[in-house]
Length: 452
Image (spheres, rainbow, N blue to C red):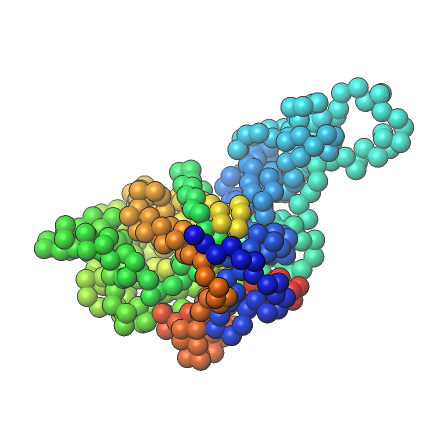
């Protein structure tokens, strides 16, 4: 049975120390509520993509820091965001996930709003007094304080002030989005194929930390790696399907994991180097063994490269395909994987409940086979059918449960402390260094104390 003795109150400033954090960051419901107010309600959060709202009247609904919002393109060409809550009696105005409308009519009392949120009409207007009629402009749907996009990726913030979106992202994160779009031969990507949703019984920070922890893959996923090796290890590596390659990529030695570089950035953002064989090209000089073996390009991959060369030239194409990152993390809840046309978003729903939403994009102008590969990667990596993600979620749920046991207060994150190296706009370290986790806790403290 878990120890239910109360944990003494600790000031926020004391919850994060050098190389360790209080377990209350993961277990205390009161801290979780503060996180939703001070982190998720202040940061810029991804809500969708401009390909979802190409034409006036196009809209979709999304989550923003636990709120239900509508994002729509108005007749003026601008993208608007507003809370999905009628200003009359508080009913949900739009119950559809996406579509095209000239207006939004509340299903409760038929108050009708424009695609910019303005109140257009309501039943029995004469029943309201003159004061109400003079205040009609005040009864539009409540606007999201800020909404913006970078290279077509739409973000919103419930904070009315603060840094703009490009500044929030920073140069290294913007480079990930640039590469995402530049990989499309026609210079445009579109959100396609729906989404995959996974839920696990654990704190949101556990998953964010797990994705940048390069010590665990060859340990936690050993059974999956062994199964892949047992099935295909005796065959020519070229015969192994992509799904097997994705599993076996976790089997690097600890020395090889250390050579996969990582970089900590401002505001908790970070990125880690690539280790999964690219769907088009490989250039893993730092990796040896089976994980580094390059398969010949398929006909579709050759056509894709040729299309990129026609658009960018050979040198620029090599730069685009040579952009080797596994994850670029946008604190507090976004994962960007440009090499496999995927993003993931974490939606915390309780201190011990989290949803992960995974999306795949189509590269306009690329052979359709490239989209099929991207769907395959998402299916293998971020759905319940993945034998790797299943390991991760099982481990995170066991961590969540175990953190309620015993009396010791602190969780250790000191691996590699003092071995970091300063770099332009950030700090770099070896792959198994827990620098990126400590960097996220630094951002957590900044948001929670109002410094960010």
